[in-house]
Length: 551
Image 1 (cartoon, rainbow, N blue to C red):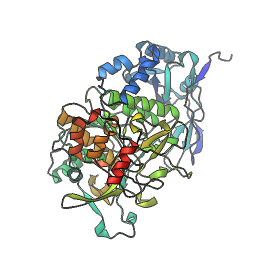
Image 2: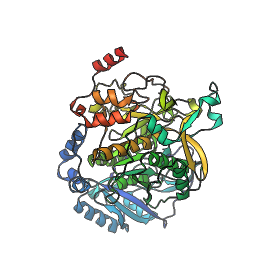
Image 3: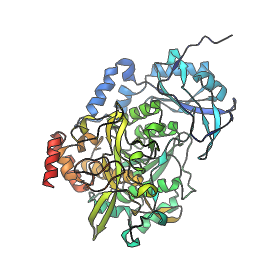
Image 4: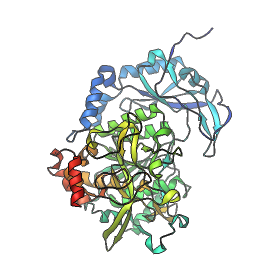
């Protein structure tokens, strides 16, 4: 007898075949898998206007962050909705895991056999081989029984294809530009870069920096050796497991380089801060769950999160973008600053279709998107800073215009190029910092010394600065974007980068799609953020032209 259950599509859940993947077989029906089901927030079930009001309030300077408890009470999942999902799980032979199921994160972790998952979500799961690793995949949309359709906003984990890439670049001899002499390349200890950018003279004591990693790991012996070599007290570093992933070092040429770069950059500058590393699988489920876990972590309470992973917007399902955007909005609402690397593949973001692309989640309007520069100095002073662009093989900073997110109110008047896709318009990046491997960072990875750059270095560089500012002010600076897109803050808090390009976009006076507002002038940025400048509006096109004339 045919089932009479009516199913409804989960909006934006469509998946297509992965290029280069080869079908091996159907997934074994008795294999047990886990999925994360995202629930609507209370503010949706009660009044959709509440979420719209929150989003609008966040775009304006002076927003007062909510505590984690306040956020859960207003915008977490409804306990009655969770009861409905428990009923759904029972109907389809699925198990609700209490660990991993949280109303604050609006997440329910379910496990069950492939056979039961296929029935519950109306999908077919198959195994594929791929040069980057085998994975379980699906094609088409996810559906849920119609009676639960209003409750469920996303289902993640049925498909576990790799989702993101780390944005770091090792300095290799073969990557040196031919017109340079070996003497033209240099490298820095991370604290030296902080000194060049005149970071506040604090150590981040009392703050917590969250770092999200989708692979790799760290060795505590490396950290002890590294910080000792810099005569810096070793920071407290804690590993947190998300969705079964763990601290798994072992490949110095792989994601271990990303992990150690992030920890050592942040820890060298804010060694008084606690550093919590959230390890998650490199899937859309893992990435989303890592963000929600870090943002809602009431034990460690990170005030700033660093993310150095991502991929082009076109590589994501819209359900993933929507749910991650909501998670990042939640972080902003709770006063957590999220710094994200803008990518290392220039204006194309590595997509070979002849068009410009930006990286996600750097393109999300609730994060501080971090682009890259080439930083040269002498006698402790910056002598030159230009857009990082070492060509196709050496990498270049990401940047451009989002195809997904519209122009935020705080970017009005900043000459952001027009979007090529209707509905887009958010300019990327917001800020920049040293990223060129040829002026990169001295790092220790699995016992090996290396020089590493990429915009991966810029996210923890800015996260450390935020921790220092938070310590100085005694409170989280929170969602930075509406505060820094401000005439007085822009004028005094940044080194404006006016030379270079990342492919199709060129540096210019003021904001540009290569380095955003520029690299930080730390002490002045702190003064501007804590002064009277926050009452002023965003810089106008006219005032930018006046700046250019004066220059």
